[in-house]
Length: 331
Image (cartoon, rainbow, N blue to C red):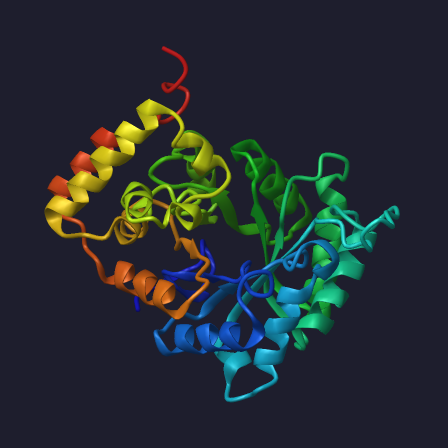
């Protein structure tokens, strides 16, 4: 496993990030523990979760599963760079209540303590803002974060689903306070969705913020979706926006070209999609969310896959990027 530094920090993280969103809703606790053990064995030290994972009435369940895994000892917590998120509403289902979500200083304080309890640890390595809070000023957010750092409850702060100008605004506000600011950004980024290249990634690079792409297979679209459809596995091969995308004849043709190209080179589509992200400037590592041990093994193989220039060129032809801004949308 290769390692890199997270943004401008000195923290070394694996170039594959273990996403845990399936732990609880789709993968039971015992299997989730096995996947986390296998990840450590493979050298993956960067684990990502969120306080709302588990969803619905089970919000927080994923953090609890990670906490019970840490409780087994064996250096599990010490070996893991732990990232979780705050923003989602944690009020009980059907019982909405003010200040149970977003990024007010009050909610940040309550949410971090609740996450620490579920995770069974006394600190979080990377505490991430799951979404932009348009109603809370950055000075308030950084005041809350600075207190948590001083208390030893978190080490670094990151963002998710922020625009390029949000990253700039956040880090300029932090600089005025003498705060460290954002060190990472989780964004939707993959071969089929490259809009982040216009402004999010350049902003992140300019401020020393590491990019952690989520949905690297675009909901399964880039994981051999058409092949699986032919083989009878289409019901699990895509989801959400990707299932809708395959109804479009132009997209189906694009994905067919993609799968044909990789078949010609003997490369698994999902592994190629991850390997491509590892070649992109500013990317720390993509988040993979395995439901099974084999899916994790595939991600590890992807981290070792080196795509040659001819394949990279053809991938760019199939999935052309938007180009940098402002040239992407102006003269």
